[in-house]
Length: 124
Image (cartoon, rainbow, N blue to C red; front, side, top):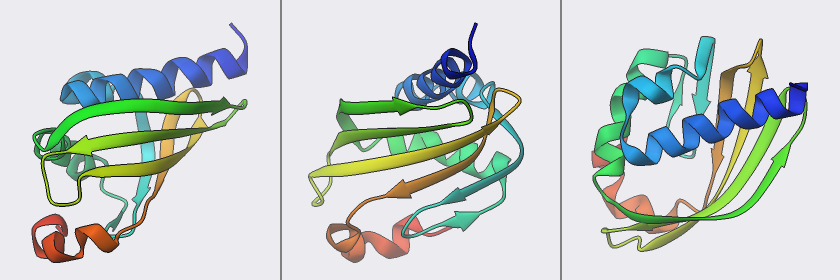
């Protein structure tokens, strides 16, 4: 298996498990140390990040993958997340960094303005 194939397997495995709400399967693809950054959250707490997945998935009504780009130790996914919130559909880009085949960094990029009214319920 090439490095790009290993990256794809880890990132797609995490992505699919995340949107199924399968925390254990998602955790299998996440390494240590770990950092997550989004317009609302900047955290180095792997366990805390994984614990938020079921709450997030509870508002998701669908996901449409638009693009996948894979390198040896990084990947970027672009997708639309359909939510049962006033934010509606959210175009999202997610950049991953990997070490030894595990995700050690996730940077989520999206327009946070539709989420501002819900901010108090999002921040940990």
